[in-house]
Image (cartoon, rainbow, N blue to C red; front, side, top):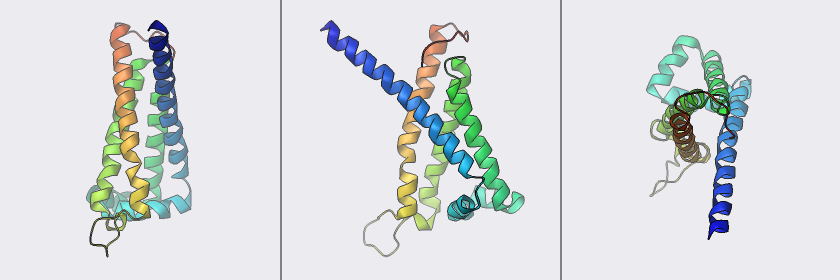
Length: 164
């Protein structure tokens, strides 16, 4: 019985590290893409269909807004990656990612291009299929938030390094 629990604990620990740094990698790579013109074109329908983002796009311009989003994604990824050095900072980054993914999931409601329009039942379009992955990303962000906060409590709030 002890070997089973040890193996399960190792798998869970590996899963947590994989989830955390997979989230970091996704945020940083996708954030970097926001500096490419084709990515500005790709996210245009999402931005112009969202009431808060359409106002920001008018204020800053689509290219500048995409870059602000990109810098935010890269920064959030960096905060999450800080987990071995500062669980508090990592928890803050994970909370920010939670808010970000909740926001991007709202595009499923505000973006007409997220759904095939001429169907009897709702069907996701390629844009909607792109967005739906953020449910998993939201779950990963919530998981990494909880894990980092547990470690903060375990360490008594110190920033002592800990694996993962």
